[in-house]
Amino acid sequence: MPYLEIDNLSADYGKVPVLQDINLAVERGEIVSIIGPSGSGKSTLLRVLTGLLKPRAGSVAVAGEKLRYDSPKDLRRAREKFAIVFQQFNLFQNMTALRNVTIAPTIVQKRKAAEVEAEARALLEKVGLSHRIDAYPDEMSGGQQQRVAIARALALKPDILHLDEVTSALDPELVSEVLDTIRLLADDGMTMMIVSHEMGFVREVSSKVVFMADGRVVEVGPPEQIFDNPQTQRCTDFVSRILRH
Image 1 (cartoon, rainbow, N blue to C red):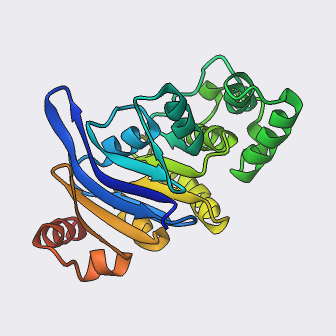
Image 2: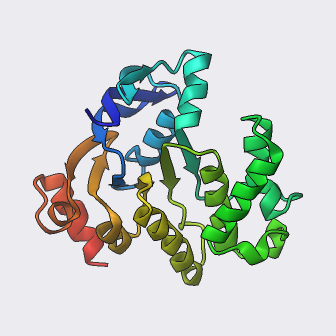
C-alpha cells in the first residue's frame, strides 16, 4: 500500500475547476517531482494536500487512513503529515533565523522549548546556516532565507515535505545552494513532492516525475521516461519545447 494515495481528487477556485480527477501514489522515501505548464494545477495540488484549499471531490489517504478535509481534526492531522515551503520565504522579519524555526513547534505543537531549540540549531546546521542563527531575514540573502524556510518546515517533523517552486524567486547564482539542500534531504530519505521548473535538477533527483496539464495528471513515470521517451503527445510536446531552450 502506498504511503500517500490520492484518488480522483478534484478542486475548484470559486467556480473554476483547477484539479480534475487526480490519481497519484507516493511511497515513503520517494521524491516525486511535478512538472507542467503554468496554470496546470501543480501548486494547487500541494495546497490541497496541505489543507490550504478544500477539495471538491475525491480522497486522500495517508498510511491507509483517509483525511477528511472538512473535519477540523483531520485538517490538523494533514498539517502534521505535510509541510509546505513556498516560493516566497514568508519569514517573520522581526525574528532571527533560530526563532523563525522554533516558533511553530513551540506555539502550535506545544513542544518543550529546550528540545525544539536544540533541534532547530541542528536543522540550521544541516542546511548550512549554523553561522546565521542570530541573523534576521533582512540580513540574509534570498538563498539563505529559503534555507531557513526549509528548516522551519522540517522542524514540524512532517512525513512528506512539499516544495513549491522554492527557487523561482531567487537570483540564478543563489539557486544552487537551495538545490544542494534539497539533495541533502533526498540523501537522508526524506519523502518529498517538488514543483519545479529546474528540469536538470528534476531529472537528477526524482524517483518519478508527474506531468500535469489543464488540471489533470497526464503522465507519470521515471525521469528517463518523461524526458527521453514520453508516452503521451502532450508530454512529448512540453518536453521538446522546454529542452529546446
